Length: 117
Length: 109
Image (cartoon, rainbow over all chains, first blue to last red; front, side):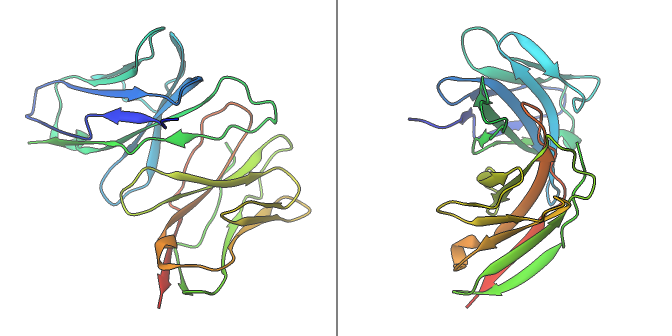
């Protein structure tokens, strides 16, 4: 029973290139969350998606960043024209589609570390 | 989401209980208290959650005050592997979790 799988684990890009980070949620989970963690800082929420829908993107930068969670396949976080300030660890988390108890426990992946040269 | 307040750092001797406090005075009736931890630069790990009652699992115990304005995470016998940043967070059903700066717990010999 695999957990949340993120790839690549490490990604190096030059300024101006595109970065694509992939996240496969826990089997059966249909909610996906992306978080960013800058060096020596806390986790910052970016976006919350369900299958084919963006539910909350209040933490996403207005430009260059986009996310999707298609009906089939992993969730993708895409960063266009990367800059040095995008260097960070990007964590994906997933949760079940229903929360009978009312709680919403997230399972996190190991993260993707983006370095922009 | 309601905000939480945690001490920035704490020390604990190995084998002793680690008691990590969290204030969440603006918590609303349907919001749960969650605890996660992040060991070094790994992905955050879920520890425990609760609504009103105290909770215990194989990792820890969660004590929530009667007015729900604060809680304490208890690691009964801390080990060196429990050294991590511990996050207390509050949210309602199927909502995003917002993390603060957490408490950096250092377990020492």
